[in-house]
Image (cartoon, rainbow, N blue to C red; front, side, top):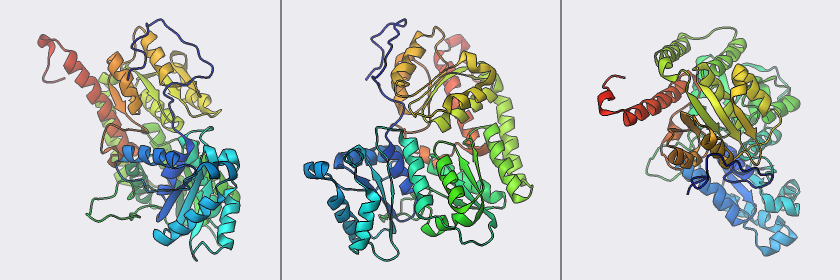
Length: 466
């Protein structure tokens, strides 16, 4: 598949409605990913089998792990008359056969369009005695024709607060902090928890896909892996002294809901990718823990600074194109600015009124040199048009797997980052957040530049030391 190989560089196609290769996926995928971060939870797609198959396959192709989920398996009849009977049967079967602690139901376009009322159906299930004692069903409305996978993630995370989190009414626990990590890899969630613990605090992390989608091979299939946030831990979130939400799109709604429900003070920060954003994260934890930063974290920061200094000569003035999720893009752009690189083109398919302002704040004086677009027509087609028509193109592409076609057609190095990554294995084991995670991104970027330099060098300029 090619995007624009057949078009000329000066061709500029203006569109009002058509989207070609969108820079997003649909809400239920995000809801399913968030639900997998709840221990002993079975996500359930209330819609057709085809929808559920797409959601599961996309997650499994990215994480190279099975994404367990149920489906209401809508037929023609349920598509017309509603899916209540299907969901009631599913609730009974799932608790009888698989025995999860929680079923996390998310809706699809079909069930939303016909107007299924999931809370009412769950009440009917309770009345019929289909919910075993101690078990629960939570739900999130996630039609695919609005939002994106990131907003679906946010909606299911907020549902965890709405259904589970409680306040005991006692004094807040001074060293317990809620950490809502946003849509990041399982290794990122492990890294964030490690940093919070090093700061002397006890994190209540939800959702938490570490130990679920990066679980070890033991030779024994576990329907519910050992990882994930437990119901009890999320229930205690109402007694925490503070909530740190990483990324306003994915984590902000849950943090605000927890404040409204349990009066837990909350702070929303950018994803801690890069030096500045990680500094903000650590300084917030420092405010909460009474004002100390352990030597181990200071050493990690120092190593990153040293690496940035050593690599700066290769990064200075280089340009990049970014695409993907808003929370990721803002932090990545800030990292590139810190390295004296220039984010030249940025697109995201996720809607949201504040994205342009957030990007403007990060880009600062570079804003005039950067094209930023958002929405249905901010797709890979548009990004390819921009790159193709730019006489200097860009030096680097950073985004998900769908950018490999642009990389091939325009002969530009690609760093795979974000979701989905379908053509590489193991990325869920390597964090890109925090000081240590940022060193991995820097290594990837520099390797891409130097590999390119080696490849293009004439025989006389092919150097052992670069």
